Image (cartoon, one colour):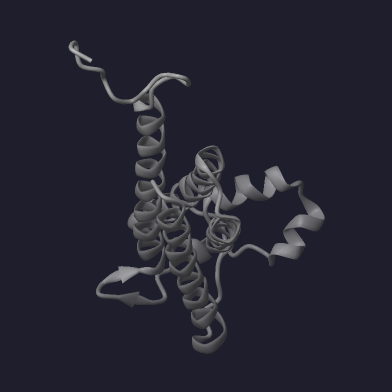
Length: 183
């Protein structure tokens, strides 16, 4: 894997993440949709993924650096995928008992620890169950889940490829070409 292809792949992942972040801010500030707690957690992991990809594209790391950047991006995309999956499950079962409307994020953090806020967000609120916007009959959390599945697949493939190339490389000092018996 060459340095140019690594940089361009990280840059394309950054552009995709930036476009998804831009779309979420557009829906919030131009269309007027208010994000719920789970949407904000997904946005955090999307911003983390986008930042890691931007730093990696600017840095242009070697193999070990690429592995570390892909692991960081895989962590953030997996976490985002879990949160998006939870919201899709909550929206798929609207009769499930969810708590009423939650206060804003600042209000939650003033009265609870961050673990309590995450527990409350994952238990679901009425805001998280409501489907307020769709595109091609998919809600925002479903689009988010599709994005996170795609970038998780990309990150996992790149990690497997890097490990495979490292495994195939001969130990240092040995030639990668086999000598002939007559030479």
